[in-house]
Amino acid sequence: MKPLAFENPGKFWRGNLHTHSNLSDGALEPEEVCRRYKAEGYDFLALTDHFIGMYDYPIADTQPFRDATFTTILGAEVHSGAMENGELWHILAVGLPADFEPSNSPHFLPVENQETGPEIAQRCVDAGAFVVVAHPQWSGMTLSDARSITAAHAVEVYNHGCATGCDRADGFHTLDLLLSEGRRLNLIATDDAHFTEPDHFGGWVMVKSETNEPEALLRALKTGSYYSSQGPEINNIEVSAKHVVVNCSSVVTVIVQGQGSAAVAKHGEAMTEAEINLARFHNSPWIRVTIIDRAGRRAWSNPIWFDQILSLPI
Image (cartoon, rainbow, N blue to C red; front, side, top):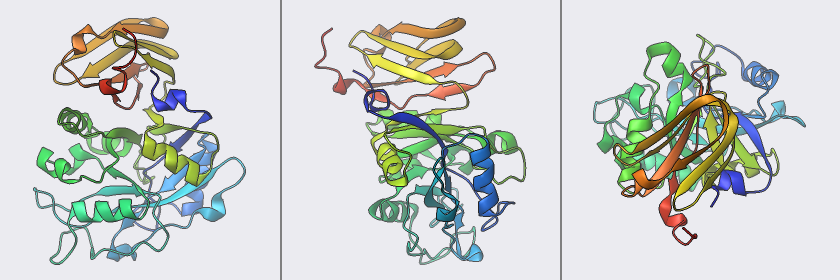
């Protein structure tokens, strides 16, 4: 069995799903943000400015910056309601319509008579968006908070801006606990770039699609046909009932993780293939794969569920 990212037809397109411009608290005009990502070899970008009243609820129109080799997906980072720590929710919504109805979110503080985080997340999904629980560690998010966003497609597990700005980049703890409760969620790595510090070109998704078009990319994101990276490339993953085989760019470590403490690592020099026995995961309903290159950069698969491979020969 191959995960969709390695089974579906098409090619991998590199994109960033969390970015800001001077329409909210970023430093650069939307056109310049798009230009820089294209110049760095990205195939697509979602500009996701803060959807609050102090910025006039912006959804940046990046359509004029599309061309034959670079495209954009409309989106926003939406905010409404308080988490358990009293702070405002941050929820990433990629693929919003340009006329998405504003929430009652005048600024970065919760107010009375506004939607809850779960409610605005559901409204984004209903509008057609790919919805992500943003930067759980940075937000001080509790597991109860994360559980409440039942409409999410994914958790942001690496946020480059949070890594460079406050060393709180992680979302894996939140993701793994939700997976172990049976939630079928995927993961993303992003920049959360504002271009006010070195917060850009550090985390992205590689989306498998036959075309680099917004609708096709959005469909692939929603079905989990992608992986996330800081640099290394995952070329193929194949899973049987007993083993997982990973083909990738040159790395020094391949790790398979599962529920609880379950994990198996293989270390080596310039590895481009690794086979890992799955006996350690007999009590885990899911696994995911991490690869690490010599520079310490990582790439991550989406979770793979064993109930999808039970019918395969052992």
